[in-house]
Amino acid sequence: MRPTGPPPIDWEGILERLARCYGTGDWRVPYLRDHAVDPFQVLIGTILSQRTRDANTDRAARALFERYPDAAALAAAPLGEIERRIRPVGFYRTKARNVRECARRLLAASGGRVPETLEALAALPGVGPKTANCVLVFGFGLPGVPVDTHVHRIANRLGAVRTPTPEATEAELRRTLPRVYWNPLNPLLVQHGQNLCRPRDPLCDRCPIAALCATGRARADGRPTPRPEDRRPAVPPPRRRRAKR
Ligand code: SF4
Image 1: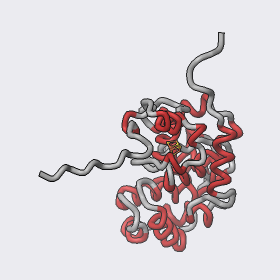
Image 2: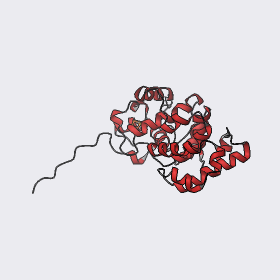
Image 3: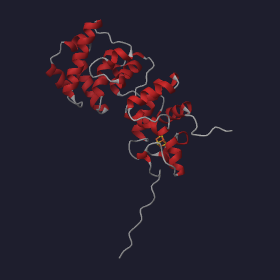
Image 4: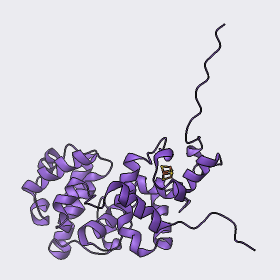
C-alpha cells in the first residue's frame, strides 16, 4: 500500500530556490556584517536588535561600540550614557541594564570572553534562545537554529512543524532539520518573511517555493491551510458590486 499524508519537506529544494531568489551574498543585517568578527559585539548587538527595526539596531550598535567596544569598557560605562547611545532601539532602558550586566558577568567569569554553548549563553541577562543561537551562528560560525517570528511562521506554513511558539519551533527543527541546513535557514527565511511570506497575506502566487509549501499547495487547491489565519484564498475573489436600488 502506498503511504498517505503530506510529502516530506524538501529542505534542499526550498533553501536552494530561496537562495536563487534572494541571492547568496551576505544576508546579515548591517550590525552583524560590521561586527560579526567579534562574538561580544554579536551578542550585544543581537540583544539590542530584539523587537527593533534593523536600521535602528544599526544606529544604536554603532554609537555604543564606538565608545564601548568590549566587555571591559561596557562593564564600566555609566548606565545613563549607555541609554543615551542605544536610545533608537525599543526598550532601551531595560536593554542598557542587560548589556552592562552581560559585560560585567563575562568579565568576572572569563575576562570578557563569550561562551560557546547554548546553555551558558542563555544564562546571561536579556539572552533568550534566539539570541543565544544567533551568537553561535553569527559570532562563532557554529551550528545553530535562530528562530524569530519569521522562521516560526514560515516553518509552520511550510508544514515542517506544527508548533505554538518560536521556542517550540526551535526544538522541533533541531530534532528534524538536517544539521547542514541549520545555518542558512534563518537568513533565507527572514528574507522571505520580509518580502513574500509576510505575516499577513503571504504572496503565494508569486512565491518560488509554493509547490514545496503545504500552505501554497492548499491555497492553490482551495483546501484548509496548516495555520487557520492563512485560510484565505491565495487570490481573493473580486468584490461584488452592490446593485443600485
Ligand atoms: S507559498 Fe505562501 S505560505 Fe508558502 S512559503 Fe510561499 S508565500 Fe509563504
